Image: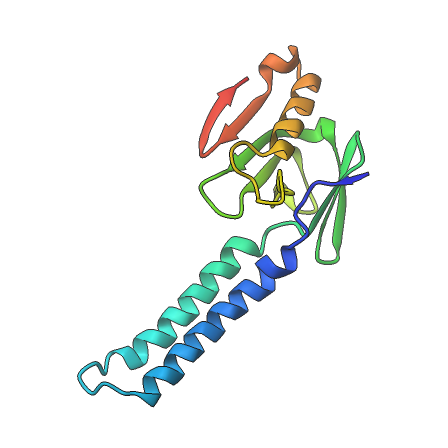
Length: 167
């Protein structure tokens, strides 16, 4: 039983969006403390930017799984109060999105489950300094689904940065 998802999901889902709102609140406070009469449009731009930044952070993190535990032949996935067991044999494709930080791993399932047809999570980092290069979690899952795919590992599909390759 190994946790393969990052342990900082509370930070990604709650602290980061709230800190962006606090940053914009501080900017508004400083702006009103030292007003510049020639830039009246800033008074409506800052709250709009704050709401847009908050909404963008929520939209990019809200669908991420809170916890993914590897049990060998299956994964236990939890998001909020919903929990699902996914057999390794039920995973069709593993994809890794390296252009977004934190890196995300997506699991495309053969049949939809409690989270739909796709499960996305932030993998545990490769080292204390984060994940630079290929995620070990994505590579391991891809190798494992490839060994179960018809035709062996050469038929395993992994998508990296929006491009799909067959290994």
